[in-house]
Image (cartoon, rainbow, N blue to C red; front, side, top):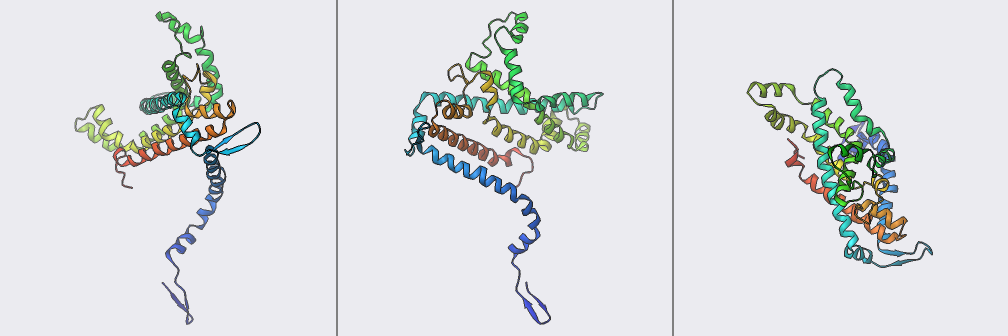
Length: 308
C-alpha cells in the first residue's frame, strides 16, 4: 500500500512492520523477562549440557571431555533405575491425586453456605507456609513414637515405618506435599466452577439429569481448560520435588526415596561429580519436555472446544 502526498509517493509499509509498530509497547514490556530467560535459562541450560559431556574434578578443577560417557554410566547403574522408578511413581501419583482432591474440595467449597469463606481461607493457608517449615512439622509428626504413631495405636496399628519403607515413605511424602500445595489448585478449580453457566445446569436439571450427569456432561466440559492447566502445571512441578525429601528422609534409607531432582543435588554437592549431575539435569529436562509436549498434544481430546 502506498500513498501520494503532495506528489511524493511514500514506500509501502509491510505487514510485518505494521505489526511491530502496533505492538512495540508490548514487546518493550516483555523485553526484561526475555533477557532474563535468555541469561538465566538458555545460557545455563547450554552450560549444563556442556558440563554433562565432561568429567570434572571438583578439587583440582580439571575438565576432560568424555562425550556421552556420563549418560552411559548413569543409565547402566542400578541407582538410576531405582530413582527413575521413584520419580515416575511420585509424578503420576501426586499429579492425579492432586487434581482429584483439589476438584473435590472445590466442589464442596462452591456451595453457598454460611461460613464457607472461612473454610476457603483455611484450605489456602498451608500454601502460604514455606515447604521447609511444613516438612519440619511433618517430620516431628511422622517420627518413630511420634504423634501419628500415637494416634494410629488406638486402632491397633503399631511400628508403621512411615519414613523407613520405600513405597510407604514415598506415599507419605506425596501426602505431605499434597496437603501443603493443594490449596492453590483448589482456588483455581473453584474459579473454574464459579464460571460455569448456571442456565445450562438448570436446563439439565429440568430435563431430569442427576448430580453425576450434570457434573459429567455440563460442569467438566466447561472447567476442562482450568483442569488441564492445573494438571499440566502440577505434573511439571512434581518433577522438581526437593525440600520435602531432603528434610524427611534425605533420600534414604539408601536410595529408596530418592528422585531425580534430589539425585542431582546428591551427585553434585555430596559426591562432587558435576558431570553426572549435569547429565541427570539434562535427562530430567528432557523428561519434562517430553511429558509436557505429550500432554499438550492431547489437549484437543482433553479440553472441550479446543481448536488451536
